Image (cartoon, rainbow, N blue to C red; front, side, top):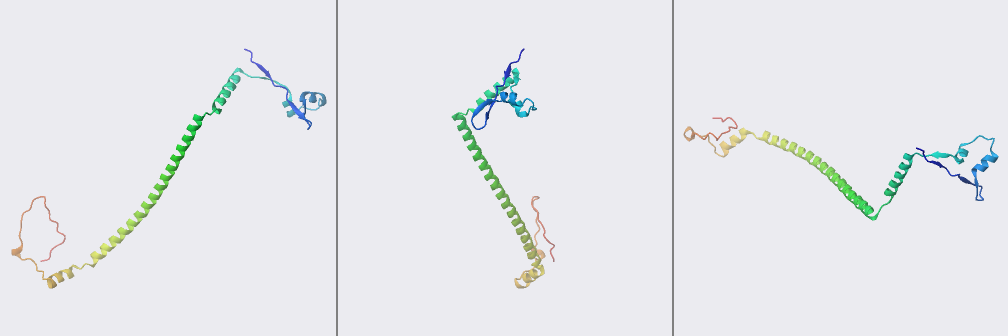
Length: 175
């Protein structure tokens, strides 16, 4: 199978400011035969180039793909604008929720600190109250000022209760 051969066209460059175009090949052939060839001279020379069938197909496919992607109709643009708007609204909502969550966490932390302070103050007050109670003073006032008397044997009644009931004795009774 023979591959197609394509020749590059002879490129021209402008000479000076006059706008006259001259072929680079004729200038290099006549004037610079003794000089070694430079990269610029090699660029301007005509060279045949071989292109494989696969390269041609790849270029055609790339060109078709480029034409397909460069064409945007009104429906596509409208869809992209709506999609961008929805993403913006979602992003704003997400940022708002994260901000609210952060604020709520800070409030919870402050309230927990306040709760622990109040519990400590409550425990301290409870202990102060318990330590300030003198049972002997209460007993003395009840007997002497209020007329309390201990129960006599004839006033004590014993009964049998149901098995589900219970009595809890807080402290020992003095007789």
